[in-house]
Length: 136
Image 1 (tube, rainbow, N blue to C red):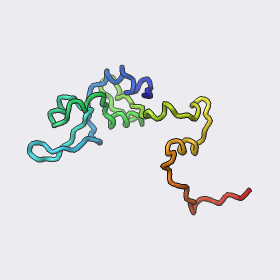
Image 2: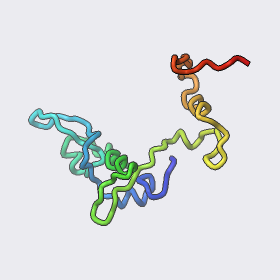
Image 3: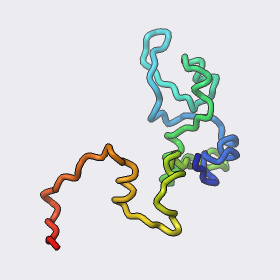
């Protein structure tokens, strides 16, 4: 897994952060015992999530994506003296990217898209906004 110091991908930062989901943008819907539509998040406190019908194993390793993404754009909430930490969301696919490195790039945007899409990328369609290239 790709990690970045100072983010929730860093185990120390993750462990220091109190489990809280107070923005609720990505909560999963469920029906409570009275049939009301409610929301729960596997990143909220485990006891709260389980009391809302969630499975405890769903909470393992979860971090609040809503709070983290707000922190990523400089709008993280302040919790006393601590700021909400960001979350690096690069994913596992970046580890084996065979196109060089950030320090010595050997690729352009088309190379990256071709690699990511491989054989599933639809054929390029000529856009009416694109000027035709002169023939060699």
